[in-house]
Length: 227
Image (cartoon, rainbow, N blue to C red; front, side, top):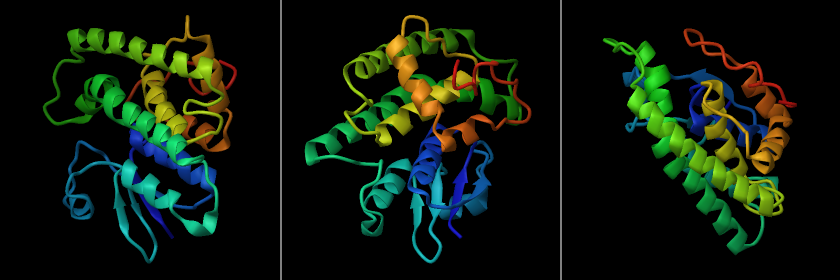
């Protein structure tokens, strides 16, 4: 059996879980807490980053980029919703994946998780989230929602006519922000319509049904496909 090391509120893990569900590749889920830095996990991935996919009888794939590229190259599965289209269309998918996994993570998701989740569980945790950091992150989040609104108003899916890894990457980050009560859709109707379509996909509904013990419950609309 394949094994995916993940964390429920890791946006990279969520994106890969969506990919696995869409291509119907089974994998046992093993939760890894990013703040623990377990030696056994570091032996698999010295960077300590998530996710890690251990292919039964095959390689250990570290990181969302490596996993997605490996799965996209599987000749036995034919076309998949990971990197569809022409060479230039696949380049656009990769550009947007880099936008969300790189820029959005650095400006939004990384800080939200650190301030609202990781600090809660880490030894010697402080008094609570840094409000100045959260204020800046909320401004950045609106900037990224504005970009999603632009893409969703011009295209059927974020990268073009076909569902792709770009959609899963974006949904991974936005859903983490939503779980933490930081996402509002006022003024972003096209983005909201796109996100509702992603929410209706079976694998994502499974992810949205999960809860993280020790953290506040997400907003009531979080798992509702008709939010």
